Image 1: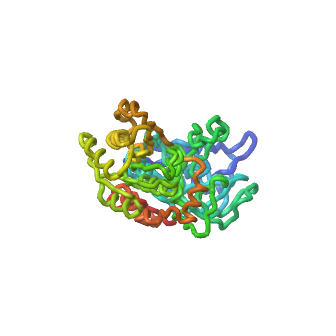
Image 2: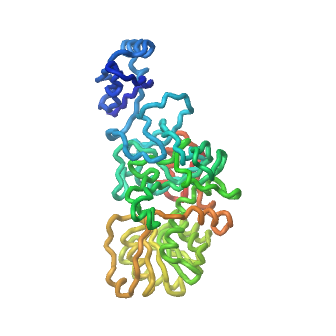
Length: 447
């Protein structure tokens, strides 16, 4: 049994006065059914003759001409927090003929559909961007598999994707720093700039943040999006659009290194050689870290880490009882004390290992969010004055990321292991590839 959404294909014009067309009674609604039937229609005359004739003819001959059908696994309701990216394809058309904008919608558990995505009007400080490169993040896969991540729950259809770069198509009248044709990387979070956190410079913690593909805000895996121009960063000539899209995951590593004060005297351990662990390692090297050891449960990812410049790699188990022996091995490979450990997995085992391996007076930075709650040995760490810090997303990272890429201090190209186009089958295959793991590190869409 499917859920069908009825939507009129032509918006009736609003009329003033007592005989106003009661357009609000022409409903988009969902009903559990196999064949769709129109259950409610109430309009008041007068209607334009052409519309009235079409209405009568359609109702009497072929109802299907008058509706579109969407399949999903939860009730749809209009989002109040669409952000700048766009609005639901259930919303009314603006009456103008334009290219239909398509996007990848998360419409249910393990269900993605390419469907129309209506853009909002271009504001004076906005830019309309044609997406050219969009990466798949672990959070995208998590939403697809579970419809939630931590406290963020998908309750209605949502456009997926937030690691992105594209080409400017149009700018608002007040935009001075961008012109059509510019290649840009997009920072995906729109903060309020009014709260104390925003005013204090920590806008990544804004409680009103509207972030691509974080419910209920739509994402960027679409042909086009509308976004604030000041969050669109022009790419250097020698930086590709794919590298521009990689600024988003790289920003996590850069922000983590800033929070932990990584520098030329910081020897560091990275727990987890997935995409975030690898970009954290690359960022730390760019910040001057002299020695980096990275651990993981997967031999292939450790091989990639070694190729990318890790000074030492070590394969660990998932068994908590192995922590003491593994900590001893990590210390031997490091050859000196571990000043800072980055837990890029966020699991009981990885955090416990990081706390135990870090020297007295060092730091552990929790980057990954694998477990919402953890049981870890805090007391032994506290008596050694090991500081525990956390990060959430990033702030003011696109300029340094782009400079690292321009200068060659960081090369993210080897992280892009798989590329896909933007068809229904390719979208499904790409997410399956990313979810499967194996030799896939970063899966990228080329639109």
